[in-house]
Image (cartoon, rainbow, N blue to C red):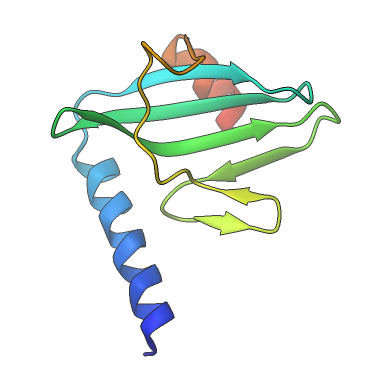
Length: 104
């Protein structure tokens, strides 16, 4: 296994462990400048909110999903930055709203 494959496997394992061990999940929505909507599932880890699932619903109606199972593609990828709902332009949403979009 080369270095890039090893790093990708470690990142995938990190997000998978967080997802599988999460007892508290928070959900948010964000509208971008192009008219797309971002749906986020995040969990608290050592005082930060780490995004473990992220779905982009583009203005054209395309859905792109990212999680430990699919970290990135030609359209984008799972953010590697913690979020701060107090400072980031995020709106808290019900779990059901997130899952409705995620499971489309």
